[in-house]
Image (cartoon, rainbow, N blue to C red; front, side, top):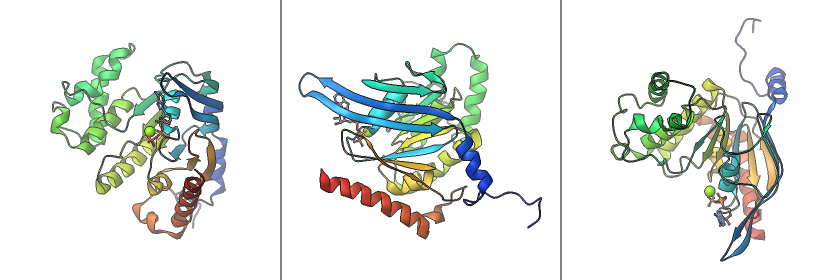
Length: 280
Ligand SMILES: Nc1ncnc2c1ncn2[C@@H]1O[C@H](COP(=O)(O)OP(=O)(O)OP(=O)(O)O)[C@@H](O)[C@H]1O
Ligand SMILES: [Mg+2]
């Protein structure tokens, strides 16, 4: 190989490894606890002593049994839910409420049915001030094109398939160009093929736009396929059981799912989750 050959994203490339490790932290979670105080069921311990540092540009997948606090964690990071104790630093500042640095995509696309697609994706800017509508309309068109929704701007949500609605929801999360994307089982309701396509699309968006992504999923293979690191959580109160580094080359390709290395990661995560189920 000559000196000028393009450098491939190989896992054993020391440059890549040190680049990743040297990136600054963008989300720092320290001793985070969450207790829901309910009138009917008393205190519900949802999260226990969560410690996690997410580096700028990282793709993190979060897996764990149902009810272990994944959505709770994302809602806290999105500034939509108060924490009970612990510290969260986002981009160097203490977390206090929703931030424009963070875009959120929920399991259901939650598009407003009375607004067309363009009006839906421009919704977040109605809460902001500093960019003009024309600016953002142009940006919205670019993003809609990027996710294959060009020409659907004036359609209404009910006229779109589930996958298309979820793409619109992703555009809405990206419209303010946030540095971080929090995604809570965004493709859970989609059929397997659309889901694969959406996974590739998310990776493309992540790579092109250099975002940091925190992605909750119930699918072990989705987690391994997408992530730099997979965080495995315990049953409620959710704590971190293990964090796995996924050393698969990028860009990821669907064939990798059949590789031996992929199988090793998936089996490890499945064993962890099964062992926890047996204990609970
Ligand atoms: N508003 C609330 N009030 C009281 N308890 C709550 C509330 N929201 C969630 N919980 C409880 O907190 C725990 C964690 O819920 P959460 O929705 O974060 O779980 P999850 O890991 O996202 O689950 P799933 O995988 O099913 O989406 C659950 O036991 C749930 O019942
Ligand atoms: Mg959830």
